[in-house]
Length: 189
Image (cartoon, rainbow, N blue to C red):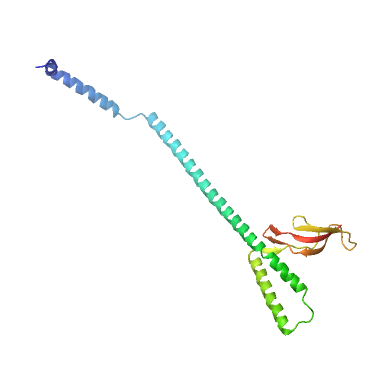
């Protein structure tokens, strides 16, 4: 027999019982009920972490809502920009129709009058498209406004006050509050 086996066999039953008691005491100490202060500290820590998590969640929710608002605003702005670009291309056509209607001869045959009426219908349809897209003509009544009008000439006019619009040379248009094309005007000095 080896010396290790002999030592193992020499362990007395009293020693085994003593070891078991020590283990039971350690286990009992581990499973003892924590103190009230320890529980209160643990509860406070859990509440602080819950408050921190709630605050983070609320901030994330607010950021998401703000992000969605920004995206909707940018999308609306992009749509307005594209609509404005497309509608701006219609202005020369409207200018040509206005010029044509200003130069209609006084005497027309019935067929020519029908043609003129047909073109007036086309003009009304174009104006309806502008109206549906909240595009309106810029008023040239009153004083010159550099935000809305573009002065072609400044003239002396005894009939008008200084800075008053004498005549409109080309219509201007705005969509909502955005100027798509300023009015070309003559201004009194």
